[in-house]
Length: 428
Image 1 (tube, rainbow, N blue to C red):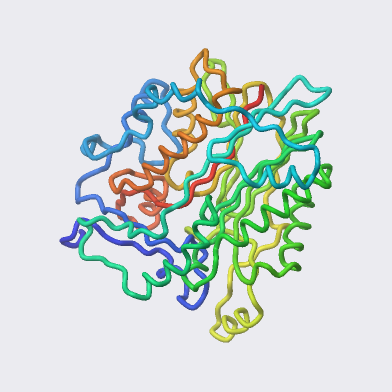
Image 2 (cartoon, rainbow, N blue to C red; image 1 turned 60 degrees about the vertical axis):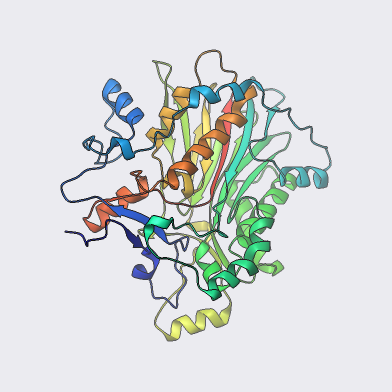
């Protein structure tokens, strides 16, 4: 059924789109391992234990896989109990200046795992918010020695060196985050710059970074605006300013009304948000989530800035770039309650783990006595770290590999290396 080699390098982008047109994926060469004939990869043992106990069949059709590959699986949540000591020792909160300019600088320079708590007048609710991120290592050859003779050519090595400056200037890689508050609410969200542009020599992080800057500025100046109004203004400003010559990005962000606790959110592309609420048995369940917007597998809706000559060249070849407008985003509204946890994250997380995996993680690490108002930063950071570990594991049956299995009719396993950015909110 498969070739003699047990491993295969899958470059989805070259199969889906004309090579002369921007691949609307993250432009990644993703390593997957076809499962040997007659063999099924096991799910993570923690998944199996909880689903057996709770009768949870999960969010996919592969939950009944046999346990033949257990020794090759990585336990995403292993050693989490040992890491709980981090919760009590997490660093102090920042105090922000009341000036908009100073606030903007602070809100755009969070450390990995940093958190703050915001209280509002005339509301019994307060909110602890954290951002965590793990950029993909684009300057390192991600192929291991046992994957065969694979080495970067001179051009690729030079390209990596030329782009090192851009990579290091963006601690979140091609992702970016939105995180700010005023006296009437909080804005939170994520963006994911489309990595295919970097293959053509452009900085794929530029558009997500500049759009995040504009959204933050506009929200601080006009916090009463809706998410769609802010996005319209911000995207227009980025285009008019001209700092971004070419690029595309997905976006998922929302505004929490500090007085009412209402979350108003939008999503364009394949980033994601979910609201996790405690059920009657005091376990977290994902009760609200965004739907991904894609043209086809791994080709998300995206806000794009593309030069006229690029568009004309593509048209002559009978091709088109993927370009969307803010008005095409999906909009959501939801009332938040005490103990809710809200996560906005890029596809680097949800391409590797499912929402029910995140449920398990939250339930395993929010036991009675854990004060999330103090430990949310650690909870968020460790979630990102553990997901990143899975993304690099060629034996893990990731969400992305399961979708690929469904698409191709062949069984694939393997994590999907990518930037991961997560903004987490806890309601108290």
